[in-house]
Image (cartoon, rainbow over all chains, first blue to last red; front, side, top):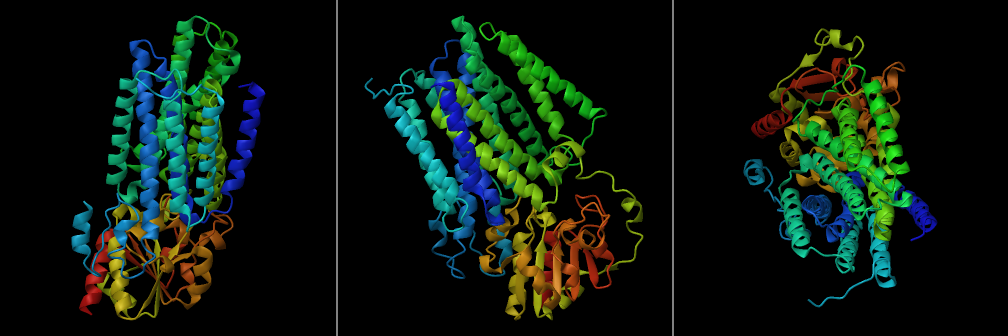
Length: 126
Length: 471
């Protein structure tokens, strides 16, 4: 790619990033930060590319660690974001959250306390 | 082995990358609205899957054992960590994920340089400059994020750790890094790997030194800023590797992360420059320290608190950082349940920066099954305060300090607060009278209608709930 083409893409992406983010309710700041955090895990692609041409021991190691780091960033990032957002959507079917709860996110082990049964609830959390 | 091979930079690969980053943009956009946020995250994840698969199909990608081994290990770590993390530990988890992203960028930059050297022609200047940028910023981000993680996890003191002559050391390091980068860039066809490693190490030191002096209260802003930095460094890696998906996705995170950072800093009435260079969050509070414990205040026990609450009409709970630390969200919900059984109206007042990150408190309370409708934002609840019987402040401090409104000389003057002092009565659950992150005394504690309940938030809440049951 021509350098100025890349610069053009870069500048346009800067403005898209500014535009797309304005007016976020504070509630969503943490999940959104977590989601954009997962998106920069895209750097794992760079790891795949450099690991592809690695040809000595150290380069293998560097490439492998870079890929593993990137994978943690991507997988962990999206899953944690999903868990956080699952906390909100689960609330919608108000009081009787019991059956619908688990559906939203599979990795979210929902604690569905009887009112006032905080003791058992905390045990489940450990 | 039969497999489709895409030409790097060819139409097919580029088209798939365009689909991928379009999904990122849609995903982020949907992430800004409560109803679509969860879907938005999925959309972005699909975009990521497309980008990864496309790259795996590129011509020239090889060493499959290595790649899949690393992919499996990294994914497994990510899955386990994100399932096991407590909601209260979310901010440090984000810091950690951000750190490994930055680390990956720095390693990729190193590999690029090494590869260029082994080919004998180094890198083009066009590739060398972004590679250097990626190496430096990635390394700063990796180490800075690790320090942020360690501070939030209480592995190292959250107090600002100031080294004498800090600013000078940082400046010298930065100049040294820039000089070494300049040398490497000028000699881009024969770069020295040793010098590049020295650059990475100096950047690592800089990352440590910049974040160490920052207090725990400012950490969310720091993490958000480092998140934006990592995005930019990923974009730089994209410049060096000629990869459009990296450029667009990295830049998106860089610019959107910058906006988020500024929003957070604004909500805390701080400027980003101030946070990075002043070392506020825990600095000695001029004079305030001496007076602590000497001013008259009312101290009550769980039983008194239970009586005040049980016979109230409306109760507003103001959760803060202390609630998060004590993991008291379930216990507080229990108090609210008991009160509601008695016909008391209970709401929660959420300050924009309550907890360790904007939105953090909402996540915590949602985890404890607090109905979304009871979470009131500051602007919504403040007009209600004069009609509130009892405001319960749980582990919050600076965000309730009336000095922000009344004392123009206060360091937090002008910061928006939850006006609990307007309520008929205030109960503050807190371990001691010690100042909050701003390091200043809270006038609220000494007002006539304020009662202090000195205890751990979780224990106090459990005690109060038990006492209400016994009434």
